[in-house]
Image 1 (spheres, protein in one colour):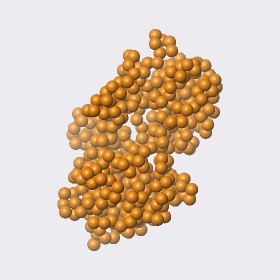
Image 2: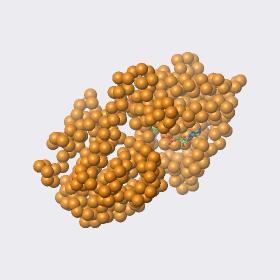
Image 3: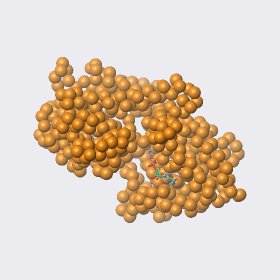
Image 4: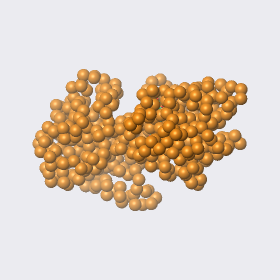
Length: 472
Ligand code: NAI
């Protein structure tokens, strides 16, 4: 039943933290996380623990185990050969070309990982699909493995989707609501599921480990993210109604969230959800429904994405409207570029789209984020879908290391990420350094808007009318 060696293919936001926690909780298991990217592996191995991803408390977990029973390597072949159990944690981005472009998940990295396992594996292996995949992907992995199986090898494929959230990955991994394991309803399938469950049972109560069939497990991950994204889109739709009436979306969220049937989580209005998963996984579900000839279901979930796009456009339009219908050549500070606080991840960040819409209007953007590097911001803004003229980005965008520097001489600032430090800035000093009227747009509802108004700011927050009868 026991597992002595684990390999994880993919040292990203999921593979790195999840296997570090496994190593810390299972000292008798050797865990090797492998990746094609030498740069990423070097960062995981960096002597000063300057890890490739920022997650609270992650460096401490890595410090505890690295070099003992946790290893990061580019030697994928050896790690696969030696392991009893292999996690596949590679990326599954939305396809940008061909059939299913813009909706289906691109499974080329999953397939490459499966083929690599089939090529080099010796002996029996449990192969665990941890990446988020469309329903029945495990079946494809099993077919690739079976078709290439060498004598004396046997593979059992499991689905074990990851539910961690960036920004709280370590905490989520240490105290998950549940762990989900899907497998074949055969004796070998059961045995494989029990092997994987044995690892998690080192720190997670048995009752919180849910065993299902493979397809239920795969679909549950897509459905979970679709439900979470749907709640954000639902409250964001209500935020627009609040701004047009006199209701306050925080009061509405609280009032409906105290109903135990609804619950209070994921009811915070904002300028829209971002991150690598929600949009990708909902689109994946939409594509799946279309492929299954369920167009009504596909249209239903597509609305979650449409509402999210609308919220970002709506907020950007509001900025332009408030700034007297023109932002051309106006300086606007963008506070926050990560898709949420406590991460340096910018994938699908709402901030990117706010910048895109404002750049289209000719605004000059002064961007500050406490954790995102300049190169990363410029890479996102120079993506052809955002701005296909690099000279325009160069002309309109400056990246700042100091927030006060970014805010100086601006007509407005826009809070795009809910970083805690934004709450404690000296807004009196900021107000004095800005052009007047000085506008504050809080896309995350983290600032004390009454205080800002008292200081003289013209304030706009998501989901609340901050002015009455046309005056602030
Ligand atoms: P990521 O892009 O940060 O990491 C993936 C890593 O896999 C990259 O470092 C890449 O170089 C490596 N890779 C790709 N093909 C490889 C191969 N053949 N051999 C070795 N390494 C290879 O992606 P992330 O965010 O860790 O996501 C991985 C999966 O987990 C995705 O399916 C995602 O949807 C899912 N997921 C992500 C969550 C998140 O918060 N980021 C949460 C839950 C699930």
